[in-house]
Structures are given as structure tokens and as C-alpha cells.
Length: 158
Image (cartoon, rainbow, N blue to C red; front, side, top):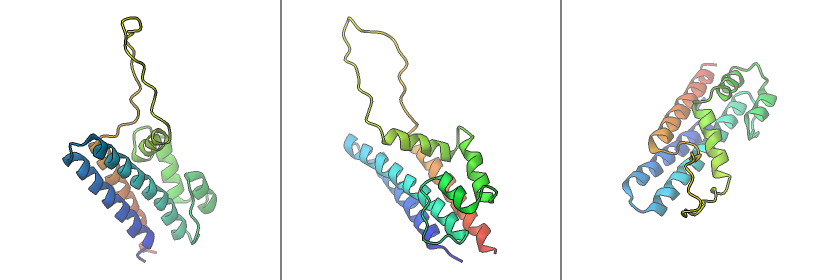
């Protein structure tokens, strides 16, 4: 059973990879930022589609859970996918938690920068936000693709 959601997830992740490739080839800072934000938005959209794919595989067609809590309510907390994703939320350095950080960062206005003068020079550590490097985003895309593929394959056997 090939799911249209699985195809959509693959497409969004491929388009995100394409934007990241463009980001690496352009020298225009605005284009680099647009490619970066566009890739992140596509990856975040793909994550919601992963939840929708899982809901569909559990016969909740037409339902679009917007977050893990909604999905868990639909399929139950003991469903293997709910357990796997819940486990990911408790681990700090994985694709799910990295996407949570990126989602929060994109939803906030940039931090206001102070001007530097002789009167206010103080050495401080600045929170730079989540890692938005091409390598990190590529890792997230790869992990999401593998996860979506494994879900589709697992349920195809049924």
C-alpha cells in the first residue's frame, strides 16, 4: 500500500535538499537566508505529514494531527510509532528535538542587538539559536526520510 502521504513527505524533503544545495552555491546573503528558512519550513511541513501518515496508517483518514500529543490521542500511547516519537522527545540531540528548536527559533523575532560603545563593552556569551548549518539540516532530512520509509515499510507488510 503506497501512501500518498509518504510520497508527499519524500517530495518536501527533496525540495528542502534542493534549497540547501542552492544555499551553498549562492553568495547573496538574502538568497542564503531565504533558502535556509525555506528548507526549514519544508522540513517542518514534512514532520506534520509524518504525523498524518501515521494517523492514516491507523485508519484515521482525513485527520491531520498537528503535534505528537494529537497523534497519540488518535492512535493510543501504546502504538509503536507513538512510543518511538515520544522517546525522541526525551532525547536532546535527535532530528525531532532539533526540529522543535528550529520551529521555536523561526517563530520568534530576531534578538535585538546592542550597539557597541566604550561604555558598554562586556564579554558575554550569546545564544546563537539552533544549528541551521547545511550539514545539520541534511542530517535531519536523512533521519526523517529513513523514519518515514521505515513506517511505510512496516505497515506495507500488513
